[in-house]
Amino acid sequence: MRYPQGGGLTAERQKFREALRLKAAERFAQGEASSVIAKDLRVSVRSVQRWRRTWDESGPRALRSQGPASLPRLSEKQFAQLEAELAKGPAAHGWEDQRWTLARIKTLIGRRFHLTYTVQGVRKLLVRNGWSCQVPARRAVERDDEAVAGWAKEVWPCAEGSRR
Image 1 (cartoon, one colour):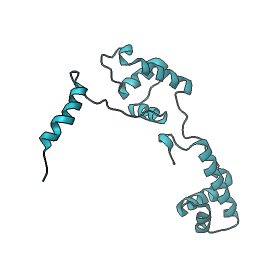
Image 2 (cartoon, rainbow, N blue to C red; image 1 turned 120 degrees about the vertical axis):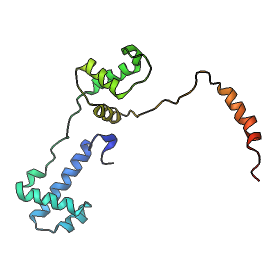
Image 3 (spheres, rainbow, N blue to C red; image 1 turned 30 degrees about the vertical axis):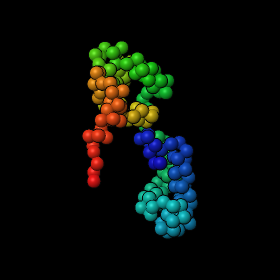
Image 4 (cartoon, rainbow, N blue to C red; image 1 turned 180 degrees about the vertical axis):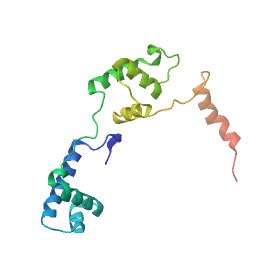
């Protein structure tokens, strides 16, 4: 997968892609056609053409990996602390109901770690670390699951009737 959990290329994948670009650079020096290189390396011709242009302008060093696009602003240790704070629940942090929203998590990160995130940045941070967006099922407090199961088993078949 190209962008696992929205987090960009993994370190192994970056090394692999860099190795492809450097193999292509060796073949540029031999004067091979872009289409042949693309077919052998199993990449698009467009990518090979872009690499060739970069190679022509700046040489093979320009094809080396630039490293990750950005480093996470919260370290793994800080994210573990954030998870512990989230486990305490919103009420422990001053909110009346028991719903974590992205805006509330953003506020919590600001209070706890003195970092500012956007709401979408918080979403990406959570998704990157294996969290998913979940909306709680709305259920009445008075709901009796046993009565519902009994109704579905006994009353519903009679009400549904025959379709013939």
